Amino acid sequence: MALELNLTEQHGEHVIVASGEVDLYSSPALRDAILKAVPKTAGKVAVDLRAVVYMDSSGVATLVEGLKAAGAKQKTFVLLAPSHAVMKVLQLSRLDSVFTIVEAL
Image 1: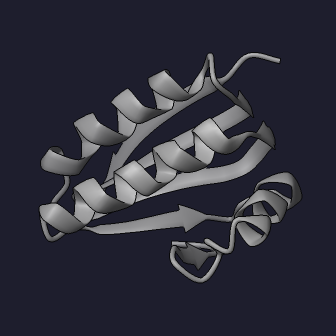
Image 2: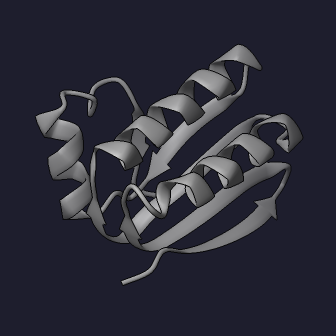
Image 3: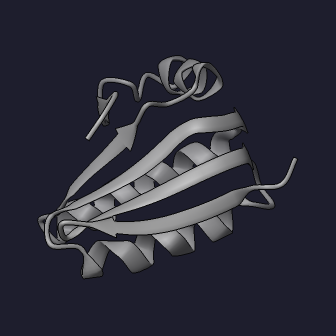
């Protein structure tokens, strides 16, 4: 299953909706979307992960890079409603406590 990305802007906040699989081949597209959204946002970048069915370590590295990029620009970076598959990877890597995870904006 390929990765699909949908970008929206709401009240100066950028939301990247991801669906499908985030792996070695598709994570660069997510990385580009995040790194383009960070400087444009008024304050928050949210990555909606509710429809992600698989994520590997390259996907996790992409999210960490987004978190660092947002922090460097003093922007907020949140993960929105991660699927069970994503939460499992975040918990195994012990990054679930590093990210701000919300169920709704």
